[in-house]
Image 1 (cartoon, rainbow, N blue to C red):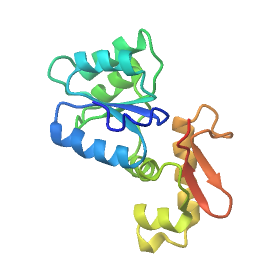
Image 2: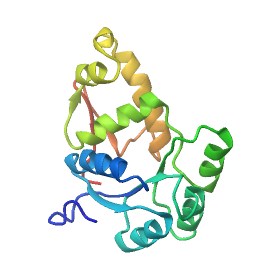
Image 3: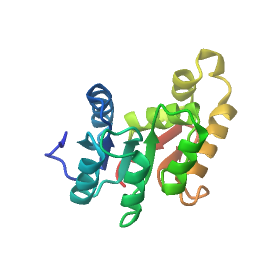
Image 4: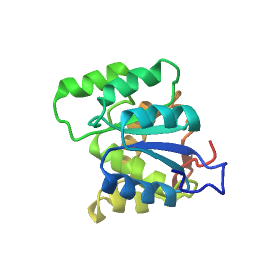
Amino acid sequence: MDSSANNTNLPRILLVDDETAIRRFLKTVLASGEFRVHEAENGSLALAAAAANRPDLILLDLGLPDMDGVEVIKRLREWSKVPIIVLSVREREDDKVRALDAGGEVQLTPTEYDLLRLLATHAGRVLTHRQILGRIWGAAYLEQPHVLRVNISNLRHKIEKDSSRPRYILTEAGVGYRLRADY
């Protein structure tokens, strides 16, 4: 399902989760951030949607009804290098290791995830240091930009090919950061 069929220039995200409420919520957030969102409720549909739509990013739940998310990752890696971010409530370390070994996206800390989600929901727009600090850490951190710099640096190391020359999370000197929306 395509949330913005009229604009084919938007980055494409494939959202794979068997829970309708989670898909609905994430689709709303991502579509408001100017992404085209395709959905799949199981592994088989995810593989077909990935082949048909060639997404720029896949958000994948590991607990799918027809096959394990790790198996979906393995099958995708046979023909695609699309970045995959694993969304899962699984807490066992070996589940996370298997997903990463299969080719999932690196593990983000909760703060890094919140930071990336904030930037993604405002993709293409500059968020000031104070806006980000207030939303992620709260009012007590508004005057501590070093906290933000460290977390942006850590996030860039995880998602950028060359963190010294970022392509996705851009610095707006003296102002803040922006997630590039035209990649």
